[in-house]
Amino acid sequence: MVNKKGKLKKRCKNDEDIRKDILDAALIVAARGAWELASPLEIADLCDLSVAEIRQVFPTKQDIMHAIVVEMDEAVLAGHRVDDGVSRRDRLFDVLMDRFDAMNDARDAHKSFIKSYGWNTCDKKNDLKLYFSSLEKYARVSGVETGGLFGPVHVLALSTVYAWVLSVWMRDESADLSRTMSALDRALGRLEWIKEFIEDKFSRS
Image (tube, rainbow, N blue to C red; front, top):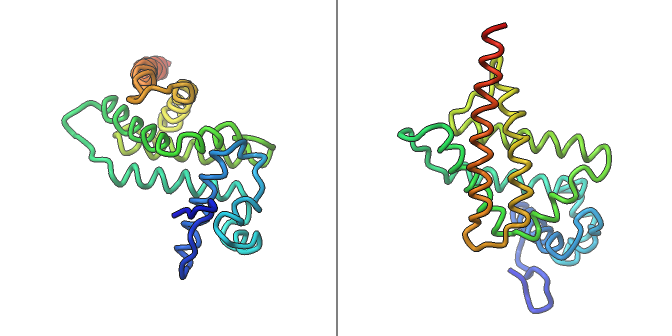
């Protein structure tokens, strides 16, 4: 919780409290401006810790951002109920929209994170690894094959169309994310076509 001075209120903190305060403070800082230019000192000041104390939990600022994304994905997937009575495409649509809704809860912060992706060569490698790992989890829970011969191709194709939908979400100011929903529906239609085309070509070779 934030007090009148804009800082997270002090309380007797255990390790989990400290971790949560750091992540909450990082969301506030990221929402204020460019994440790649944000200082760890801003985060430390908000949660009443030293930079050294923060680095004991998260050695780098990128580690903080990755922890936020991973925890968001875990919450979305844990709260998602798979409907076996609908198609894999509809399941994928539902769970990805759940992810967009979750990002919308801290919209400015997540937009700042996305714009900072690949800020330097080292970050780019780790950011891409996180991106593909996230989408693989969403594909798997929707029943899309992520292993075997075609699994990596499915994830790569999903990552391509998702990137386009992500760019739409970043400009979508509607209350119900209607533009994002429409873009995701169209993107999954293209994904379905790509999947069928690749598998058909391979089966004939």
